[in-house]
Image (tube, one colour):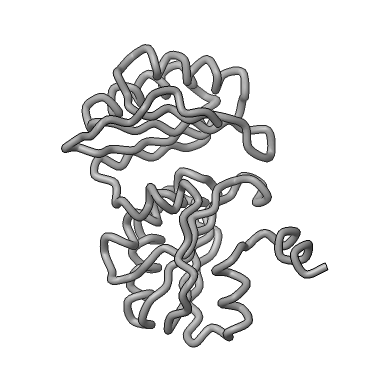
Amino acid sequence: MTTMRTPRSSIEPALALVDFSSVAVGIEAADAMAKRAEIDILKAGTVQPGRYLVLIGGTVAEVQESLAAGREVGGEAVIDHVFLPHVHPEVVDAIGGGRVPDASDALGVVETSTVAAAIHAADAGIKGADVRLVEVRLADGLGGKGIVLYSGRVADVEAAVEIGAGVLVRPGLLVRKVVIPQLHRDMWENVSDATRFSGRVLERL
């Protein structure tokens, strides 16, 4: 994925993502999105299994206008989308690969059927409860799904999971949600470092 523009400061940070079932349509829609509004960030590319993601950022009005163009051009190829007019900064960091490695009282997991749903759950959960985002993992190696990992005190993690899962109102978006109190230290080491099995195995061999 390539950054098309250098982000500029904004008093209205917004984020949107569109998930397309067709790579060809996704590229066409991404072009329309870039032409419709002066967005600050445009990142686009393929993910498994043969889908195309377009992530945009900027002011609320510009992102909203750009998203409308993407949905219009994408038509039936749009699998899902999310629009966050005041996205939490930790969500942006987590999408970019940021992690919270420190162990905590509990781990919460929200597993979604789409990437957009995972981003929506991550933002809602961290805004609604006193938790940290351990990871927001999107699509690749997940068959197009998304996972959100929250950490914190048990009650706070329980609240974050319920809030995050609760915003997924469309049937089928929530795959599963769990809260694990006192996660074993070996599992903390695994989930805080990487959730990809191949990465964990290769570093030990």
